[in-house]
Length: 96
Image 1 (cartoon, rainbow, N blue to C red):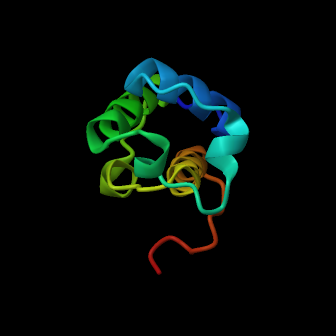
Image 2: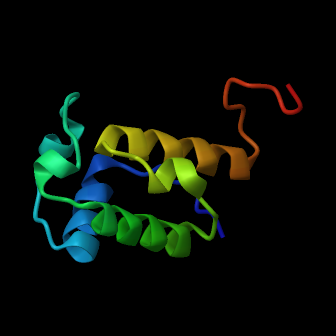
C-alpha cells in the first residue's frame, strides 16, 4: 500500500521522535553532514524507524535502509524504494 508520497525530513523528524525518542527539527536531519549517531539516534532507533516506515508504506525497505547511518541516506533509500514500487524510473533500467 504505497502512497506515492515521498518521505520528507518533516515526516522523518516525527518518526525519529516517535520511534527513537529523540526530538529533532527537520533542518537538523537535512544537514549534509548529519549522522544518526551524532544526533542521538542509535542503531535500534534506526531499526524502529525503518520498521515503522515499512508498516506505513507497505514495502520492505531492506538492508540499505536498516544500515543507513545518516538521515539523508535513509531518506534517499526510502524514496528510491517507493519509486520502484510505484513503477517510476529510478535511473537504472530493470534487468541492467
